[in-house]
Image 1: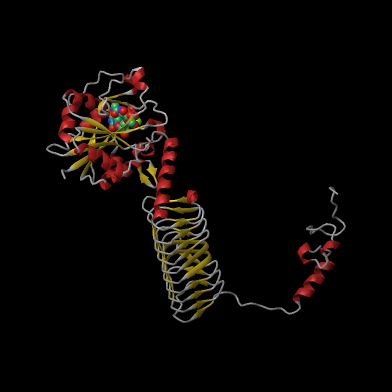
Image 2: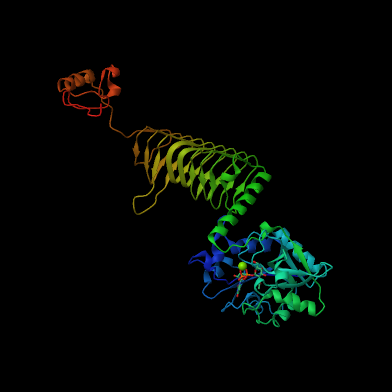
Length: 473
Ligand code: UD1
Ligand code: MG
């Protein structure tokens, strides 16, 4: 097959986004729009891509690397924009597809169909669609035999042409040399005073070349020009990712409330509860249960693990096979080896927790002293009692036990017990004497401590008797 290049137009200012960031860098499912388009081109087996950007859009250039970049210094229209890729493609022979960076829902399948139609003998294949409201889209004018005669821009169209429902998506496939040859002849004597890419169809027809329309579903060709359209596109992308996850063998309890990033990887028989957010860089093994209300990013979760409800896995979290991370547990740069459990109310950061270890409720790794981060190492099968603070750097040996409520600042050898807290005092008879003293001082007992709660006319009050008067009664 001849080589093919994707020319992606991204030089528009995107003023309707009301943003300092170039429009095409606004993200869908955690990835800039322009990269969605590049990815579609890559999956459709384009060997090359040239992205046309505006002046001062270096950030876009960096985002699309290693794709080539051409700069359009003045925005004189889509035809003029495509011409800026000419120098980069000097000597290139093969097909070119023109794509718009702000039309990010285009699928590789549809892109392949346009390229195939071109190879089947059309000089130009244009992707057309029938939107619910054709609005200001360019209209596709067909001949009797269904071939494409011309594309007429809305502002230049007659009433009869505006009545056409079939619209130009902007995507077209054409031999690269023919493309640049025709574009060199395009003029700007039109309503907008721009060099229209769309004019190459009429120019090709004048040479007797055949042009065709490939129709595509309208939801792939939605353009993003505002934040409202961005949100609509995000919903469409999320729905695709949800369907893909389910098709690959994951169960989503309430798909509409599962949020994915473009790179989320789920294994087979993963069960995801309601309201789960997958941020970037998450890989989940087979048979993992992710219960409701979890927020997970930059994490690797091995098979058979149980996460949540209400767990937070931050970048660098690694959960081993069959390990448990329970409610209100946060992991950051922390590994929980196979079968280890941290089931309640913990912060584990910059830590390594050995296989089968048990982390009691409320355990905190104190990893930051205000200047430096330090590591906590917990050996296999160690048992950390509830409400312990492990002040890093510190190591707890394999099988060791830390008594509840300890603040551990020194290493604990394997198999040892470490307990750090004031010894408990027991004062016999203290309670009765204490209550007698309070009675003599005429202080009311709080209702929970009262022997006969119904007897108190003024529950909850701890005032001296005689002075309490409730004016509301
Ligand atoms: C264009 C088409 C129209 C089609 C519509 C589909 C033309 C003349 N018109 O109109 O037929 O129905 O898209 O959405 O092609 N761009 C540049 N440099 C420029 C001008 C535009 O890079 O000088 C880029 C924009 O960033 C954008 C794309 O080209 O990605 C389309 O430009 P836009 O101005 O939105 O074209 P439309 O008027 O929507
Ligand atoms: Mg547009």
